[in-house]
Length: 94
Image (cartoon, rainbow, N blue to C red; front, side, top):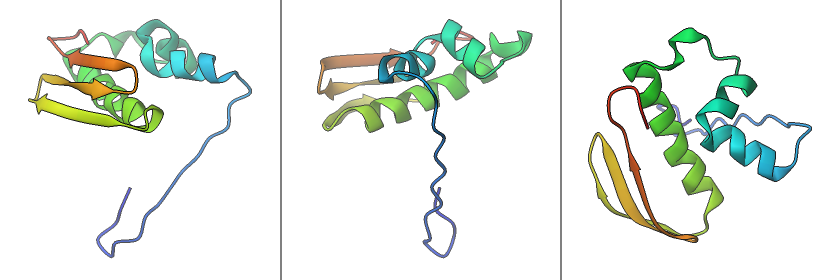
């Protein structure tokens, strides 16, 4: 997060888990619910938008190369270290 003065605030959290488990926590809705103790309102359009945004940040952090070819409010397409990707949101589903 960057404030108006241009200073960057970085918050880190260490988990006693393997890298694969942490990646699953950010990429699997079911695992994310368990790790972050999400309530029953997790399956809402607002929660899906939050997950959509978080997932994009995870991909940017995971890959050394992420080129976005097209992006709208509901879809992101491009190329990353693992090949082509598409992330789409529709209602309460990502």
